[in-house]
Amino acid sequence: MSSSHSYPHEPTGVETRKLGMWVFLSTEILFFGTLITTFMIFKGRDFPGIKLTDVYDIPFTSISSFILLMSSLTMVLAHNALEAKDQEKTRVWLLATAMLGAVFLAGQIYEFTEFYHKGFELSTNIFSSTFYVLTGFHGLHVFIGVVLLLALWGIGQRQKGLTLEGGMNLEFVALYWHFVDIVWIVLFTVVYLI
Amino acid sequence: MSENHIDHPTPKKYVQIAIVLGILTAIEIALYYTEDIVGVFTDPILIILAVGKFIIVVGWFMHLRFENKMVNRFFTGGMILALVLFAIVMIERASANFS
Image (tube, rainbow over all chains, first blue to last red; front, side):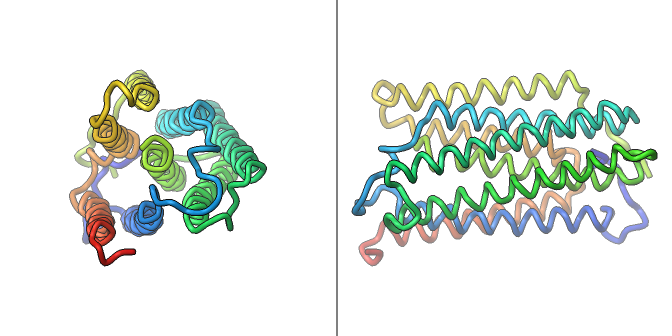
């Protein structure tokens, strides 16, 4: 990312759109912070119906977590390739990131389906509701990220391809994607491991 | 555009960081299965590992460690507000008033 560049002509010293992206991510922290807090209020309490610990599959979720973690690597490699003006590698890494995100999403859909079949549904109790809202919103963010990545990949396929001038767009998507990853780092620990 | 440019990590460095992240995740999973042995230290260690992974991704992959101080303040500000909210609610939950 061109994050180490300074912008002396901007009053803040930071490219305005980029600062806006970071402010957006800051609000997203509060959004997920609220959802995690709500989840934690009800975690560990006794509710009628099947418990989350009875249905989840730690090995499966661990693999999903690893996949999402590695998608952050492919994302940063895509940006690195763009800075090296290597269009081919940029496209390859972008597509790889989108595919890893899609695999994570497929895993989450499979997991939710399994939970439903085992009786842990959205309306089972208030705890299950907080679980689905929290992890579901994260999944929605991953989905949006995959769409953005594929859009960038599509732009990269055009004759001019992705340019360094337009690289800021890739940087924004990268920041968003890494943010989705750090949210999952927290969720994996808070929801599944603790 | 590129005044005060700081060199970013190389792809090799990024791969090394990803390997560290993978190892930390493996330790987390191992801790989950060895909770009976590790005992009361399991949860604090899991939280420390998650915080470590969080810092690595934010600092290296999101390049926050190379960023302008204003960007750092916005991100840290959001984190602090979220943690304050979390702390207040958890204190309230622990009290008898939250039933």
